[in-house]
Image 1 (tube, rainbow over the protein chains, first blue to last red):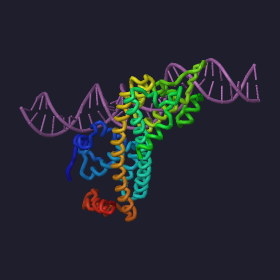
Image 2 (cartoon, rainbow over the protein chains, first blue to last red):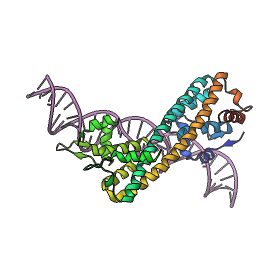
Image 3 (cartoon, rainbow over the protein chains, first blue to last red):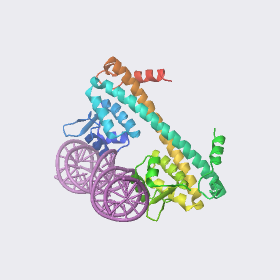
Image 4 (cartoon, chains in turn brown, green, purple, cyan):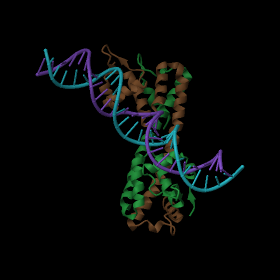
Length: 148
Length: 148
DNA sequence: ATAACGGCTCAAGTATACTTGAGGGCAAGG
DNA sequence: CCTTGCCCTCAAGTATACTTGAGCCGTTAT
């Protein structure tokens, strides 16, 4: 089975070597072995684990949660229920976070529209209610009417 | 125009009072005024700004970027081009981040399917290539065939 | 009038996730 | 043989975003 050094794995997953060592210290890599010189040795078997870690990290899951999951992984079949539940929970959490970001995106697009028009006019004044800097709701209504 | 204390604003936006003060110190609230006793006073005019901050924070935009934008806001019409460009940039960045999260979600769903089946069987063994802990690609293919 | 309630500042502490630096080992190439 | 390159550990430093604590002020309720 092909073996990989920490440097090769770092390049493959676009992280620094110290970061990988930090992850190992933090218990995220309980599957890595060492050679006679004490150097970390990664194998093809480990790549699947590393992909999971990569996915969870890109999803901004805290390291301690990733650690918990990886520990279950090396404990074998006895932890399959926990790992299944973990995936159910993470799926739900991620769905919710995506929904929040979709709402934020909609808000940013309305603001973009607002600034596109303000920029063209050279002033925000036309949007404001008299003697305030509050945007007249009619503009928001018009934006929504135009973008449906 | 209605006025609000820092405590009222904190309750409205689900943040702590010290957090709001920290934001003010960090330059995120250049629009807040003070009363004769040095207390922060928020007005209806400010609520629009606070919504923007809330949106950017929920999108995990760094505070220094939010600060830059809020400073442009109080500088008036001269900064409309920068603010328009800011919205364009943030829209694009957020679209990309949502795409990454969608991909991560797809991965988590595959893993959920995997653990659902492993859990039912009581073991992961049936998924592995002989003498490895690598998942036989045929299972991934089957999952993709079943979920399209 | 005094205690509670909220507001204030400033300094220090906490958590997370790394990064950087010092000092050292092992193996391959000139 | 010794320099280069990659590996190692351990300790300390950095950045971000808050939180906590000490000590104080002004308004309001008892």
